Amino acid sequence: MFKKVMETINFLESKVNTKPKIAIILGSGLGGLVDFIEDKKSIPYGDIPNFPISTVEGHAGELVFGKIAGVEVLAMKGRFHFYEGYTMKEVTYPEYVFKMLGIEKLIVTNAAGGINKDFSAGELMIITDHINMFGTNPLIGKNDERFGKRFPDMTEVYSKNLISLAEKIASKMKISYKKGVYLGTTGPTYETAAEIKMMEIIGADAVGMSTVPETTVSNYLGIETLGISCVTNMATGIAVKPHSHQDVVKTANEAGDCLCKWIVEIVKNI
Ligand code: HPA
Image (tube, rainbow, N blue to C red; front, top):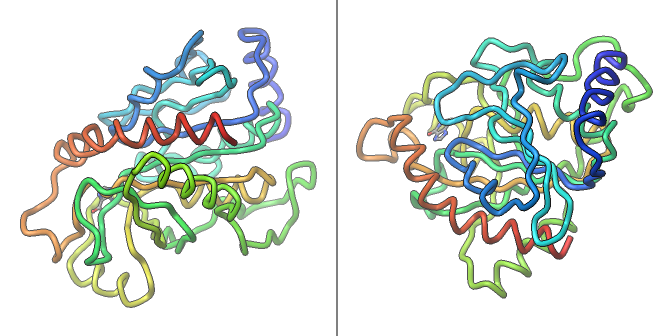
């Protein structure tokens, strides 16, 4: 793994000469943030040695190097989902690359279903913690101490500092938001109403099919992480109609505009 990551790094360093310290993962329908990136250099995943290729609708699949308000960033447009058939190591491969590139802070976004009945579709939620219901863990397997410890602590997967920064900026910009626990499941099915009832009981505010693997690994690697969900729909049993991926992407696109402006200010002030 270490050797593979270094091959990827050598390739990327031969293509770009920037040294971003902030990475951003753009979730389903939230790719609009790349329009805020200046001096862009985009590299399709397919061109990057050892990188998996994203396949799901609504994900373009490229790494975008550039600047947001003068600050160097690296954005992932399109992520790798476990439900696409990738292994957990493939899903989280980019985080290892981020670490070796010198990334210190990560902003993760996603589309999620709202479980908390105080939420409504189109709202944004700062992730305060997560519940892993993938039934597996991306750190299973032999541990390489060059990356991190065998038994990582999970007290602060989502940085309290970054949460407080995001909150300060939101109140200045008059952006309304919720805070809550994100529950990650494999998908690709949406949940049953009974599952959502259980998820509510165990303390989840929103549910989605990503993020938990990536942030489990970013925490392990010592990358300070902020997570923001876009509640694209209310979850099964709470919503009045069946879910569709098209509706999820549409709502994410609509709410994404506000999320993009928020992230731009966060990056400026980080
Ligand atoms: N469930 C799981 N993942 C999701 C949902 C949902 O309701 N909405 C967007 N991603």
